[in-house]
Structures are given as structure tokens and as C-alpha cells.
Image (tube, rainbow, N blue to C red; front, top):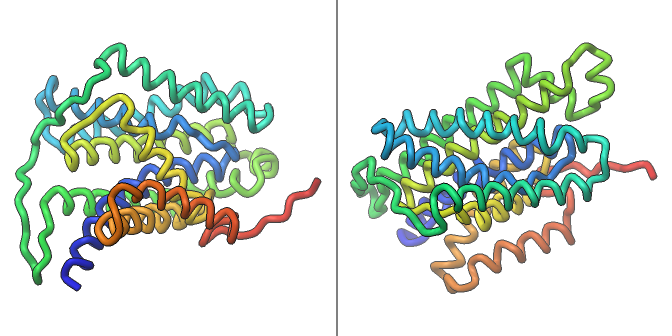
Length: 292
């Protein structure tokens, strides 16, 4: 039981990072029905921004997280304006291919400026361990869980209580009706990209702290897993992205401990196949009828 609880804590730490990235996927899809595959690379950019803020600007961890969030928010808006807005009325496959192109562009631009090799993330906090009831919890895990919880609560407040959050919910239901009611749809979409990208930027810094290494391709696999988390929970549903991220993190950790670490990634993709076969709308998603 102690081993199970220990791995549960480890899985929740990993899953909370997936959840932060998955929120960006699900918010953008909920607004404009776009699967933004460049989102995982915004997470990578956030890690490098945090790295440069700590090493070059000599700031602490929390200022680095804030700098990464602001930079990634601006990057997300720029990408939306340049790459996605002109294709808003195009077919979904066109937007999807564009998203893949933006993803590759971010990866290779980062390689050009920072090199293709793995970099060691600065050690900005003591990796002390807290022993409690036989469990060992590191300060990095507490940081990740605490920061993730805070950001998720902040996101829920923005979506439920603020004017822009109400506009986002209105646009997600019917963009044309929202426009007739005086809502600036373009600005709302930009806000959505900014918020989702900011969360990904924070996740990138947290991953750097947790694993101590970053690379230009670090966003590929976690980005796919975060997408799977969003689909599992119900893409377009914010609580679903949170639940899916935590579930995927726990499932991957448990499989690695009780079965084999060699197949933990494969199990995540098996979960995607099963959820698409059994309940394509996701665990918390609703079945929507489409007129043809």
C-alpha cells in the first residue's frame, strides 16, 4: 500500500503537468475546433525561456515562471494571428497541417539558436524530501502540485467569473450568435490562445525543475500525451482536461512500476484507442449531433 501511495503521488505530479498542457489543447478546440499540435512546442519554448531567465537574468524560480508565461502568451497570440486566423474559414485538415508546420518551425528555430543538444536546467531549489506516513515527497513535487492547483483555480475563476471568460463560453457555444451580441470574437480567440499558452509555459519551467534537463524536442511526446489527456477527459471540456491529465500521469506511473517501464508510453496510446472506440466524446464530454 505504501508503494502504491508513493507512486500515486509521483503520478499526480507528472499528471498535473500533462493537465496544464492539455488545458491549452481543450480551450483552443472548444473555441475554434482546432487541434493545435504546436502547443507542445510552446511548452518547450517556456522551458527555454525559464532557463534563460534564470541563467542570464539571474532571477529566481517564480519570476522565471512568470516571465515564461508572459512570453508564451505573446507567442501564442502571434502564432494565432499569423498562422491560424487567415485559415479560420478553411478546412480542418488545412489548419491541422499548418499546426504541424508551426510545431516543426518552433523546434528548428530553437535548435538554431540554442543548439540541438540537451541542456541542464539550473538547480534553483533544494530537492529536499519530506517523509510522511512512509511516503517520500520532494519539494519539487510539492512545487509542481501547488503551482498546478493554483493555476487551475485561477483558470476556473477566469472562465466562470470574468467578462472574458463569459465571452469565451459564449463563443464556444455559437460564435455567430456571440458576434451578434456584441462580443469581439477575434479578441476572445486571442485571449484563449494567450491563456492556454501561458499555462504551457509554466508547465515547461516546472518540467525543467523536475527533470533537470531540457531539449528542443522535449515537447513532442508530452504534447501528444497532453492531447490524449484532453481527448480522454473530453476535448473542449476544461474539467475533462484536468481529469485526463491526472489520469494519464497516474496510469503511466503505475504501469512503469507494476508492469514495465518499456511499455508505459504504449499504454497511453492504447488508452487513446480505447476511449475513441468506447466513448469518442471523452469521459466528461457530451455526445453532439452534427447535421450533414
